[in-house]
Length: 438
Image (cartoon, rainbow, N blue to C red; front, top):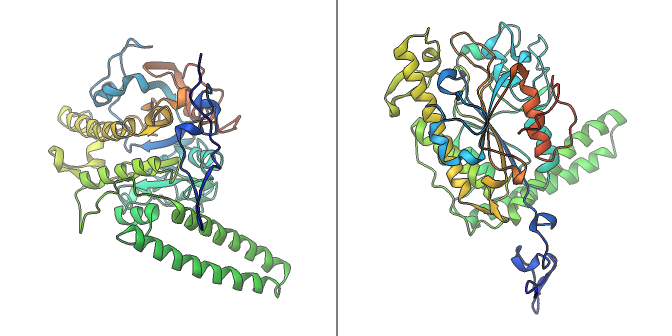
């Protein structure tokens, strides 16, 4: 037996008269007869949490069969091409989301599974995406990315008891720090790839930005020597934030995007359909280019008044969600929710075509797609529509419908996904265990 694959160190460099250049990762860097999963090139998971407001028409979401003997119902049918990497989980509820505030706390408790304090000042739990970002995405320019399609929902996303903190985001950095969701495509592009029309312009702007950061750091360090202990502590916290910005700018400077086709940003207003698809395209590119490994996305705002005229629905989303079991309204709602699945399927198709190690980005993805509400007309939080997509770098089984006892905590599923993603957590929210079957 002959082993023809030779091993080059990742540190191998090309040396010239006055230049040293690091090589990109090459197949030759993998030691001969060594599985890729046992090398430094082992695939890193991409985690994503994709939120659907206003629940789902569960009769058109939940399969009748269990195990692998199931057929996708109408809402999820567009995802059929990815069946082998899908797991539908039924029987879940999220008791911490239950309150009279309904929409005002539903989004912000989906990924924390912690009941918020009755206060206008946010006090809840750290969300799963931020736990993942701390452990699997700290070496990226953006440890996490928070994306939306609308700036905010209707007035019911706020509440006289809980305020607005939990109604307009699904991501909390700390129990008291809700993260804003970026809904503007241009701002998201600049966050991911920098300002400027060309790579040269973006590099020049980043260089100027670093010069300003250097000046700020120098002045702040000088000031530290002349203030008291409490002010020094405040300055240290401020400097930590500045250094984090500096780290991200440095990483943006060092990236090479020449091999990737960046999306063309539209001029002026765009339709909701264009905006939703463009946001997904940028999320896909963020995963592919390694800008981040953790994403949260609200596919529409809680209490959304968005009309879906591009699929023949003139009704605003939130009023339509209060269907009162009217067959015409229910049919429209199923069509709308199926459309969301179609856009998500298009996103998965792009990831499946992106090479990543020995597989694709989708092969190494761990995605949760679903809602923190069930029957939108009744504002139920059971049974929750919950779907897992992706191969999880070989740690997700797929091609199954799992039905657990009624009111099994949603936190059990979230904890399971975190552990599959390599996040070292033993407990989460009100979880009572994990799902070995996933």
